[in-house]
Length: 150
Image 1 (tube, rainbow, N blue to C red):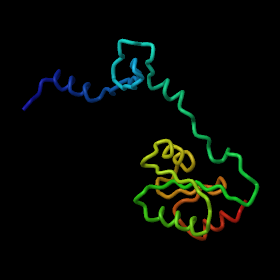
Image 2: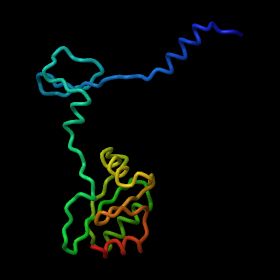
Image 3: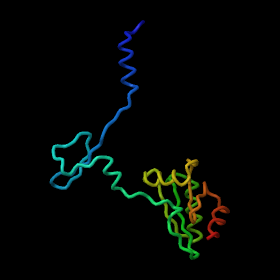
Image 4: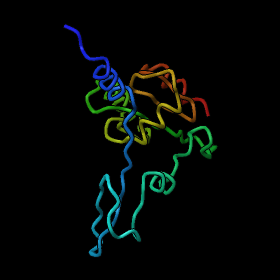
């Protein structure tokens, strides 16, 4: 069965060209926010994706955060709620009375982006950042060693 060459070309172009769409956020007179793929009639309160990205605060890399020189370690933990090693890491930190921040990379896209920036070659979890040093996975001895360094 032979197909018409123009039909094949049309199908190839249809699926080969990238799709582009702009998303607009606008606020109506009552203050309710709306998102749509087309510009609304009232253009005073329109924001597009570029405007929203420019307004959103950029996360500060952990390496540039000011560190307290006291004995209190700074610990950030990038986790998911289903990961057994993440739970072990949190239990270890709690058992040792170490304050830590958790970031669920499935619930928080900014946290997922920070994790990727901190250790681009690591796609696993957990990722602990102890005093600015990223640690892959969970190892009690590695955590203890990182916590003793200040």
